[in-house]
Length: 331
Figure 1 (cartoon, rainbow, N blue to C red):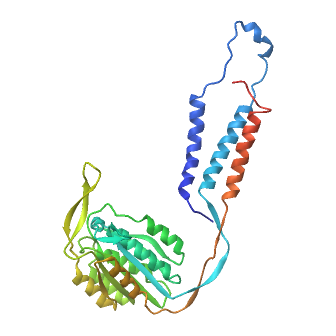
Figure 2 (cartoon, rainbow, N blue to C red):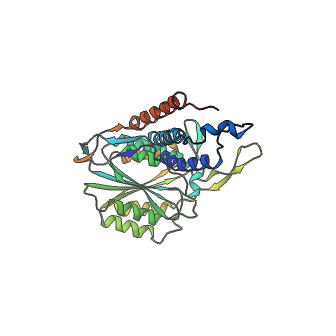
Figure 3 (cartoon, rainbow, N blue to C red):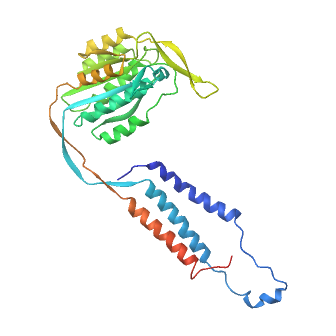
């Protein structure tokens, strides 16, 4: 059981607030009479509960609509899936320097994060039998997604990644975190793809120490230096007309350290200074050895949206019918 758009469930929290606001500020309908004697015959009548029932139907329908918008889904059982036996952890630099716009995508200038995500997405899609994990890092490393064969989940996480509001680049910590995600997996081949555009200037783990740990655990590391050579246009704000203002910033990639990391672990260092070069790098990594193994995953999911949406619509229609027929009231 899962929700495709779980944030809609927060709307349920608004229902009690709306109920309180309705009771606090709504006004009861009244009639003005010239004499109290005119209503002596109806003073003993009990107050109708119709209004409370109608409002209850409306609030319940609203809550069910929020559940429907969250798109509940149920897994249709588990099915055996042939996996390649290759587990890959991708460590992606999300520091502020990755906002430099020195790449092109579909004829438009884009920043390094956008091109890295686009190429990585294609790489994940063409390796459907591999297990992938994601590590995001800047001055610290974070597990964005554990190693998984659920690539739909993985791509949704990838789409949400953006720059981290931190100063610094912790290459050693990122590599160590990625290696730790792979260390206990029963796989024939374990690989880390580390993408960065800077130098290690944060974190408590030196990059080469993390590389030695990767080597000891049999994890191969491919390192990618992202960025053009020389300087790169980096947005620093907007002019009075809403156009981006750029500043040329020197590209400072520690290629020596990245090369040593790759060499120590049996991997390879690449320099991605253009969109095509970055794509070719992933094509080369794609030619890694593969061995088949069997695992389990959900084959498909059944949409349960109608089980909340239909009752909500029925309740709304019922409220309208009752409010305009048997429980109709004067304005």
